[in-house]
Structures are given as C-alpha cells and as structure tokens.
Image 1 (spheres, one colour):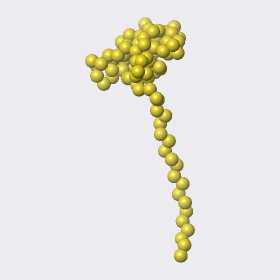
Image 2 (image 1 turned 45 degrees about the horizontal axis):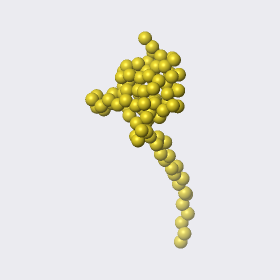
Image 3 (image 1 turned 180 degrees about the horizontal axis):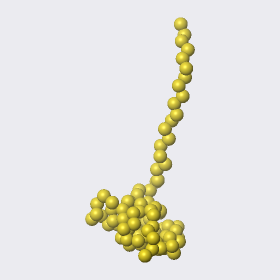
Length: 97
C-alpha cells in the first residue's frame, strides 16, 4: 500500500553576510584623515589606533568636511589584522560644535 502525503516546502535560512575583516567597536577618542583612535566598548582600557587605507582616508576626508567624528561618537572599525589598517569605519558622526 502506497500512501500519498503533501510535500512541505521549507525555506532555507540564509546566513547573514559576514565581513571578511574583523571589527573593533567602541567610541572615538581622536580622528583625522590619516588615522582614528578608538576606545573599546567592552574594555575601557583597550585603546587602538588604526591608520586608514587610501580609500577609507578619502571617505574620512569627505566626512571631516561635514564635521567629522567627535570625541565620544560610537563607531565600528573594520580592519586588516595583518597591517592594522582600517578598511571601513561605520558610525554616525555627531553634529559639529
């Protein structure tokens, strides 16, 4: 005896797109068109300074023209672990004073 049942279609869960670079989350201490210094969100004693890649530096200069990152702004820095260069800086810049 052969039974017939309805086939249930299950949608596959798509994994979130992961960045190939590690990230460092924290607050800005200092920034300019060449580098950015960030204090860690988890450990206030961990402070890291990242030099910017040429592409990130060009984007930072555009942001600086509008006011730039100020002390205390929350950012996420995606960086290359071998060179310690920031590939991308994500975060909302505060209004210039």
